[in-house]
Amino acid sequence: MLHIFASETEEHHKRSAELADEGKSLHVLRDIRNEVHEQLVQGLFTEEQISAAREEYEEKKKLEVVGTRANAKAAVADAVHTSTQLANILQTLYLRTGVIGLLLLSKAHVDDSFTHTLIEVNGSSTFFYSCFKRPADEVMRSYEQFICSRVNDLPKANSSSVPKKQSDVAELIKAGLEEITAGACTTMSYTKYDKLIRARHAVELVGWPDGVEFKAPKKISNTASLTLLLSALADKSLRWEPMTEDDVVAVAKTVAESEKEVRDQTTGRGINKDGTLRKKRVSGKTSKRKAPTDDEGASPKRRKGKSTSRFTKKLPPAPRSQSILSNTDTEDGGSENESSNPSDEDS
Image (tube, rainbow, N blue to C red):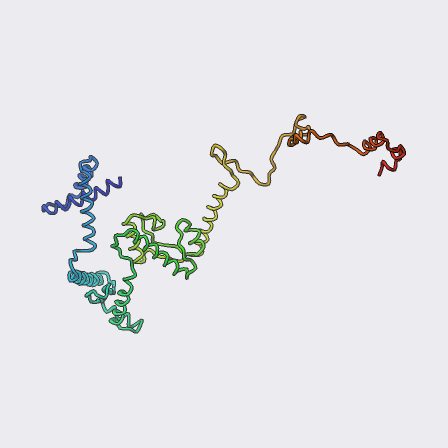
């Protein structure tokens, strides 16, 4: 369904552009949309037509953002024209609503030829001298130096390398984490984010773009998602912020409950042969056993020991007591007094 919606939008833009080129009225956009939708559902468009429309739509959107900059001169002309429009917009905004604005515009590279521009409304630039004791032009030059020295450290949003974008996103998130924790945390965890980051260090990452799954950047292979993350990190809409004490307590409680649930499901429970979990034993309770019957009450039979060696079986039996030895000595001619002396028998 999502594929049909995307294709429908692209075909709709293409058909609208065709009508505009033909000089026809565009007040029937609803009819055009319904017509394109019906044709897509009926399968009247081929995959090649849909792909071509998608590419044309993407190029058009990219052109609207970047513009047709053939050279540096055209880029400067574009910047001057846009800054003039912004000045008019701020002035008319003040006249309509009474809102006063102040805008600083600077080149992003030292080799650019754009001249820094300060757009003010109703003398709002006096704010710098009144509060910081610095004239507006001096602040503007400092701002330009700051931008030119900082822009080289920012990731390039138009980079076509997916691994480069993944690395840039990971490094920026990690650098922000180290900064807000004063070096206490140097490793970002995405799988145990609540336990190791939020509950332990009381900080959280706010402004994660909608539609982008929260996971390690190296696992995000979509170029559009990576570009969106880089843009959010560049304009600080995706940033680290400290958590309140109540939020930290709530997160820690949730983590503890989740870990307890996992322990209850796994601890002390083996696996049967059929793959099911064994019944959990309840500690502190004795198992109930049936009373033994008459047959069961008899003394258990001894386990049969190991069989003796065949050489041991051939040996003559040993005498069982000293009396047998004494009788044997008497029969062999020993003294009768020795055998009849009771003191010798007890010794």
